[in-house]
Length: 154
Image 1 (cartoon, rainbow, N blue to C red):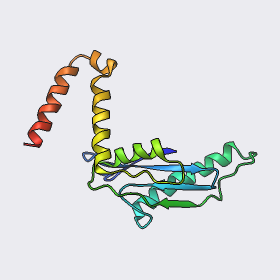
Image 2 (cartoon, helix red, strand yellow):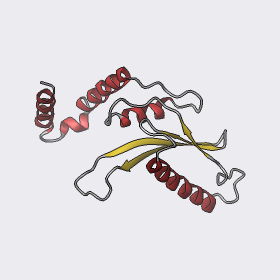
Image 3 (cartoon, rainbow, N blue to C red):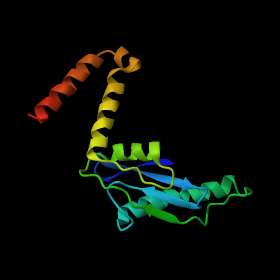
Image 4 (cartoon, rainbow, N blue to C red):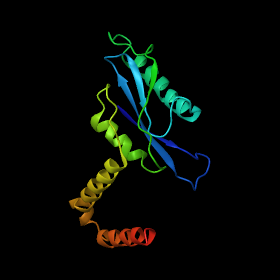
């Protein structure tokens, strides 16, 4: 499985907004699977980005594994129907769930409750990370972030 990040405004150096999705190389079923929580095969930006990566992977595989029994150049691309996110910022959480639970059969059901739990887990891991907490200014940084979040939701 490959994590993908696509800049949504690549020509705007100030806009670093982007989108996360996943591509799976399914050797058993001989196909590539694209899992995207915001778009489908009907989205030209997705298909162009995903197929550019897949074609490069096929070329690299052929160059380094040309004598392997397993060849992937003929593998088709399947855009897997997934639960779509309810906003423009949760794609990373959906992608993390794909990595954790994708088995090539059942698409993980990612709900808003799932995202809330993942946010809690990530925040807890971040706040209790020993390396992070050894950095100078770590506590001040956390306090500033908390202030911004509280201000945002008032």
